[in-house]
Image (spheres, rainbow, N blue to C red):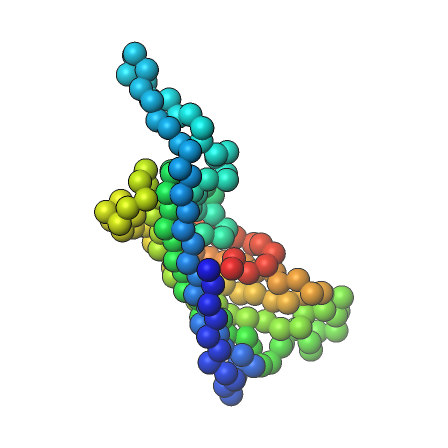
Amino acid sequence: MSKYFSLGKSDWASQRVIALNFWTGLSPTWEVNTDQQGNRVVNGNPPYNEGATLGGFTRLRGYDNNRFHDKAVLYGAAEYRYTLAYNPLKEVSWLDFLRVDWIQLVGFVEVGRVGSAYTANELLTDLKYDAGGSVRALMAGLVVRADLAKSPESTNFWIMVDHPF
């Protein structure tokens, strides 16, 4: 679920937006069984990159891709998107082929957790978090972004197409 709040224009911005995102999920088909040797075996789980996963270029960008994976997930993000009124690339004639319509500066924070049960005790403790900044541009009809995100574990730099939400 995403919600956007326009803060209107300013002297330096053609648009200012607070963007909020909330995502949650549960894969109830998972079964964890223990065999006679004490080994845990997971049955009926979704594919690794399709389940309750956090970390990567869309959710918890300060962590490696698919860093957290389990049965249940809770995630939230907030972004401040500041679209510059002035586009300095319009002045550079040899970059006209990029067709850059606007440039946007973004600050963001994210928080989330995966767990084995879909309960408040499980998903609201030991939350993982990160914060960062992004430069985005609308080029030839596509949003291109470069994100830098810092978490307690690592710092990641992502170059991607489209907004994360």
